[in-house]
Image 1: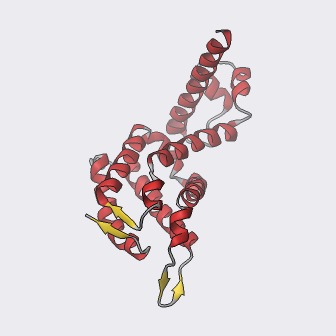
Image 2: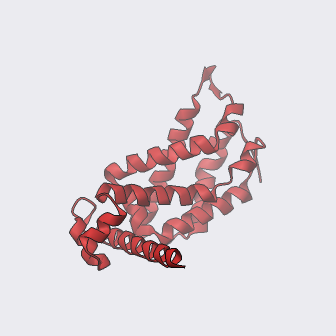
Image 3: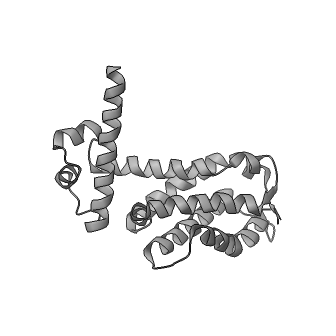
Length: 203
């Protein structure tokens, strides 16, 4: 019973630290935020912060991994791994869920898709997609004028498009909702790029 109470307290404190960090980053930018700022905002002392995170980059890595794991958790690689067909309704549902998550954590994703953060985020997302869809991509041999297109290039290309789209959405005054963004991405990217991948689209 004692351990359970301790675990709940640890989880609550970590959540307070993360929320304070994201709020401060939104206010003044990542570089300007200090450990003391975070501790003050979370209403804890510095020792408590260091009991949970080594330093600010460690906290940053933690929240980035959390974001990537949430995004990857929405994607269903099993369906694609079993077939070279994709149902647009299935893609639209997954993308809508992803954009809903992004909207809920808009400030955080704004930080992840700006400046040097965007490159780190893109790399982590690329690694996740490469692992998740390794089976699918290993079945495909993509060629353009008899020149084989590396799968790693396709992953980098698609990830960059996604991050650019997210950045535009969270930094503009667009009134597009999550489903509208999902359908827009499918319309602009889905048919052409997925066809290049050799994956047939089912309406």
